[in-house]
Image (cartoon, one colour):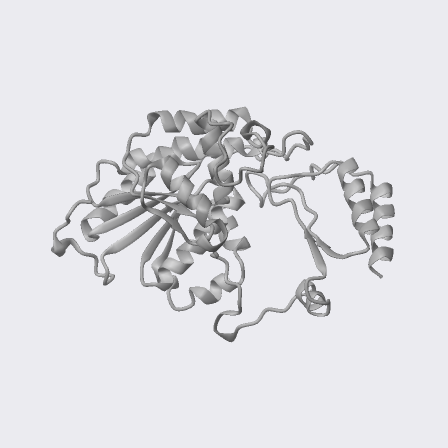
Length: 346
């Protein structure tokens, strides 16, 4: 950790700035923006960088409690819209065998190709007026660490948006430790990394890791010690680091400053018995086939349980671009399933 002369301290009061570098996919954009909100609320300036489209996407979809959280500190959150080239926004594919969003790969490649010079300029502009800068890289964007390695008052942290147990399993598999499972010895079957991530994206990650030699100051996990404490300890041992931080939950779990939001789903949920509703969602990267939709609808109808089902296509590179849905649903068959579901709920 370098010592920076005090006269270079920023006028913000604490002399610290944080620069966020997310992977341009919603499950990565969202938690880093939530973390940004918490940091600004503690008096720290945060610089959130990405393409104009992905910064807009992150702001548009962030939990509504976010706006209340930063009501008094929004001036500390700075969005940097970097000039990315036009990226084809292909519709998502429906692949029952691999749910990875391969159609988003052009966004990932563009970020790796065009972000470094802009990130370097930003860090160099911040360095003289701050005694310390924390560069928080998404775990899928390690290439950006090289940019900061020559700036003495920059510390590099890696943020993991997924669970600690998934990080541990994937780390052990990448190291060839397929038979080791000290935390859950009774778990004999696990999902392979190749069943979750495309070969192209794996090469995208490994090519970055091979060329990355910068010192990592710490690892930040989107989880809590109360849930995954033993797994966090095991990760620290595997990484041979002491600084592993758990920062979840990032999403506000209660109304902020007495603010309450009302919508149709919340109103309906408030009328249901405690712990009686099943929530069904496959996230922002998966599109289901017609057959999968029918089977899921039939299963929900047969369960005789209350449920909320989020049904959507996977994101595109540009979620604001118009285009046909990837979902190939026979409309007559789907309408029939909707009627079954309505009868099962009523």
